[in-house]
Every structure is written in structure tokens, then in C-alpha cells.
Amino acid sequence: MSANHLPLEHHFENMEQQHDAGTLAMWLFLATEVLFFGALLTGYTAYRSSYPAEFAAASQHLKEMVGAVNTAVLICSSLTMALAVHAARTSQRRLLATCLVLTLLLGATFLGIKAWEWYSEYQESLVPGIRFSAEPFTGVSVPRAQMFFVFYFILTGLHGLHMIVGLGVLTVLLVRHRRYSAEYFTPIEVAGLYWHFVDIVWIFLFPLLYLVRN
Amino acid sequence: MGPHRTVSVRVYWLIFAALLGLTAATVLVAGVPLGHWHTPAAIAIAVTKATLVVLFFMHALHSSRLTWIVIGAAVFWLGILLTLTLADYLTRGVAIY
Image (cartoon, rainbow over all chains, first blue to last red; front, side, top):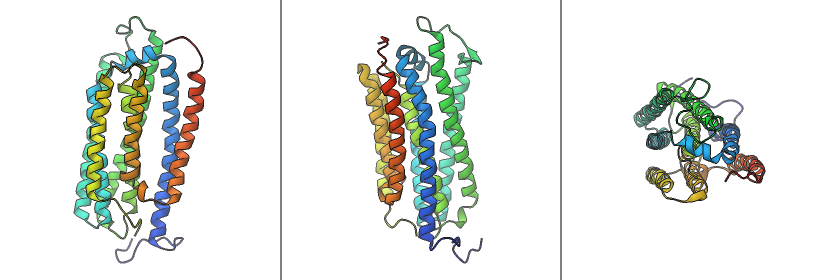
């Protein structure tokens, strides 16, 4: 790609139209992701409304403050991502790189904390089908309590997978950050949309999984 | 190039502060005895946070109507999914409560 002319694809009239098409495409993809996570969350909702006592009991075993800290970490990463888009839009390449690095670090922090959580949940025998102990669940139906953990691991696992993909995308953008400026910053904006969406998923996962009360 | 109007850096920081505040509120509300209002309260706060992220961080406020249609469609479809599912599960009359 030449540094002298804009990366305008031949099937677009101008850069603005190309930008609008790019962001619309990401929004459409995010709409499918809403249904993707939405279907899983609807399944979770169905089971939770059927087994409220077991789900509340199971939720107690999650580390609420750790989840809260992770929520704050992701919110910080959304801020740095928004600032990255702003930096690209105003041709501040070094600020763009800095904000991308910060977003990457915060995202990695989130995954590190999540991995530690999963590991400790494994140690506490809360992984159905792999390592699960019925001991802490006296008085409630164990299979029903296990369903909570099935949803917990699948939901946070899928969310984590999305985060890993996001980190990959951000890494590529970081490596290429010098090519972005006010004339062409669409990839940064589009990556930002994806990243904010993954944050929104967690914004719902945190209260739904960690703060189950009856 | 791209959208004409945009969100200022100051607004980003304000929304960031609001999101952190709402996160703290989520945790605090969970500690208060609310009975079966816990879930609606937690969802309401989460929806507020998500709305702020969509409007400001994702620039939806300054986006085209086409973008709005896509966002609306996603929310609408999710609404159908949840409404019909909950209409079933919440009206089964199985006395668990």
C-alpha cells in the first residue's frame, strides 16, 4: 500500500463511504454476536428461573470482588480503546500506539485474572464433568447446581475466546499503527466497536453470574 | 473522513467515570436486601452501562440511521428471544419459589 495515496478501494466513491461501509459491516457482525451470546444467556435465564435456589447457592462460590475488579479492568480498556480511536482520527500516531498498548495490557490483565479464577475453581472442585465435588452443596440438588457452573464456564470461556481474538487484532493494529491517520483510521474504529462489544458482554455476565441473589 | 461529528475526549472520561460508578452501584445493590428485585435492578444497571458504551464509546450517537437500524434490529431480536422464552418459563406455575 502506497503512502502517497489514500487506500480507497475501487468500488467506493470516496473514503467516507468506504469508512461507513466498514463500520456498518462490523455493526452487522455485532448484531449476530448479540444473538450468539443472547441465545446462551437465554438458556442461562431459563435454567436460572427454573432453579433459583441452586443457582444462588452455586453463585456464592464465585469470587465477587475478583469479578468486580475484572469489570473495572475491562471498562478501563474500553476507555483506552476509545482514546486510541480518537488518536487515530486526529493523526496522533504515538498516542495511538500508547493507547493500543494500554488496551492490550488491560485485556491481558483481564485474561490473567480470569485464568487464575478458573484455576482456583478447579482447585475447589467446581468444574462439572472434570472435577466436581458435591460436598459444598448440601441441601440443594447437585445436578442443578452443576448447571450453573456449566453455564459459567461456557459463558466466560466464550467471552475469553472473544477477548483473545480481540487481543490478536489489536496486536496487528499496533504493529501497523503508523499507517493510520485522520485520512484512514477505519480499522482502528472497527476494532474499537468489536472491543466495546466484548466489554458489553462482560457488563452483563458479571451481575448475572457473580451476583445471583434471591 | 468518516463521521463528521465525534465524541470529545472529555466526554470519554466522563462516561468512563459513570461506568465505574455504576459498577460500584451494581455491587452495592447486590448487598442490599431487595428480595426478587435483585435481578431486575442488576439488569437495569447493566442495560444503562451498555447503553452508555454503545452511545458514546461506540459513537452510535453520531452514527447514521442505517447503523441505528442495525442496533435496533439486534436489540429487537434479542427481545423476542428473551420475551418468548421467559413467557414460557415464568408462567409454568411450578412452585419452586
